[in-house]
Image 1 (spheres, rainbow, N blue to C red):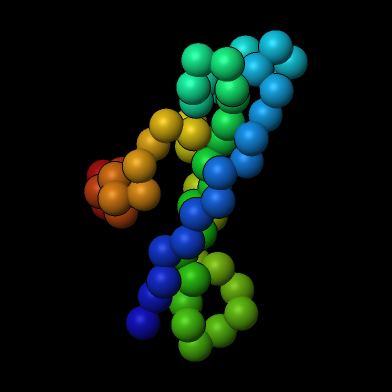
Image 2: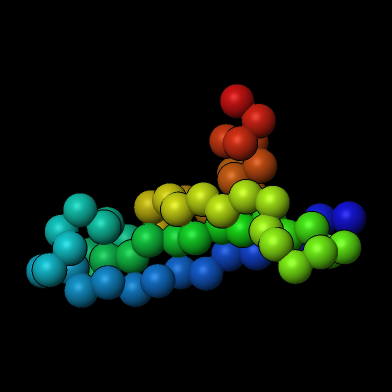
Length: 62
C-alpha cells in the first residue's frame, strides 16, 4: 500500500521569478510516494507550485 503526499514550499517571487504560483507569490511543490511498509519514499518529485496532486501519478506513468 502506498500514500501520495505533497507539500507546497513558498518562495519570495522577486528572488525566484521562475517559481510561478500566484500573482505575487512563488512556490514549488514536492510530491513523495511513500511505501507504508517502510520508512523510505519510493520516489520524490519537485514540480511547479501550480501542479495539482491528482496529475502527479499520470505524469510518472509516461
